Length: 239
Image (tube, rainbow, N blue to C red; front, side):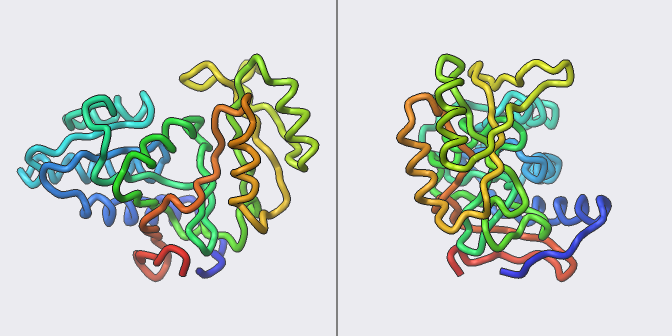
């Protein structure tokens, strides 16, 4: 997996659209489709809407990971359902904030990390879509790791995160108050050193009762779709 160059905002936006269109082409009639919260996943919505308008997706419906995505799908005229209606999804399309050579990801920059992981785990196939600027030799080289914390355990979990080198910083709203997730939890963005073993850190975080979720997606992706100057590629996970 190549280390990316620096791209302009216009180039990055174009890459996102290309990756999203490629992933949208994987959706077939009658599928239950999970939709994450990332900006690249959002870019797939108009492409899916165009396919539906052409009659290419009869019986297909969508399970969003966040209210924002649900609204985007409804505005586009696409049918929305919940996991109660479709506990097993055929495919989930989601973005990522950083991707390592093994296909492990950091997600949660938009604040929906727990629901995104639930929708990703419910899918038979999780397709991560990204621009080439998200590729990284090691996770946490370029992006902090979001950790969702139950407010009751905030002080204790922040202490734990500091002890393991996370250097946590609470994510804030524009008014300075802590940002809350849809479940009422808070997010600590943790500036770990580049991770030699993402799975080990994920296991440590999973063991903490006060950690409601975290942005490490280890071994979950089935396919990584990356768009860059050389076009769109499907990267073999672990390759």
